[in-house]
Image (cartoon, rainbow, N blue to C red; front, side, top):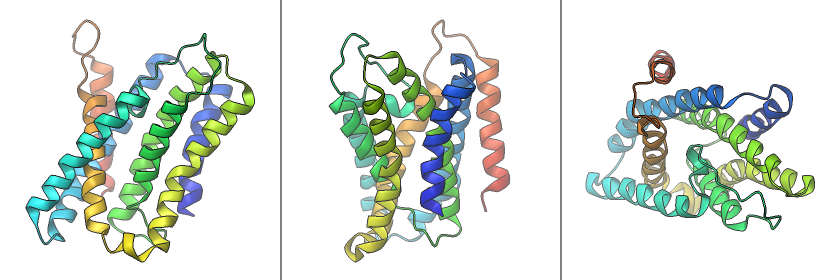
Length: 230
């Protein structure tokens, strides 16, 4: 069930581009909401939970920092697609391998801390990733359509991207070695989420003015998390 939910987030985002054709302002508000939700789940639930179950707070802190650094490296290849900045050269028709690989690694890592028989923070994490992926899929689909890539390559790109998070989840469940390091994986994922969500929320507008609509979307994301996170 969890795998289908994660796959449907990318499918929902991609189909909304074809059917609803959301404009950039709406997508940015969705992105702000998803970033706020992701950050709130991380701070309100994942952080307290991981420090409660760790044997070494220093090691956990280091792993969080490693997650932040690794995400920074991945973004040098994905050009910030994880938080809504996709820069693809529309004149090229070669498959964007660096973007594909970096996004796939990122999506795969998101699935590692999720278990199918989940409860508590697992539910919160599942829905945080679901909400986060919808605007990302919208932005990614929009940019891919504007390029000269074939429809076959676009569908292949989005299809594999949608499967990477469920794949990480399945591997985490099947391999005992990975499940033994569940707390460490959560800490690493926290670092990734902190980097992505803070970039989404705190990047300045072009004229550095206060954006009331964006602030409203962020506030709504925080309030929804507070109301739903157990």
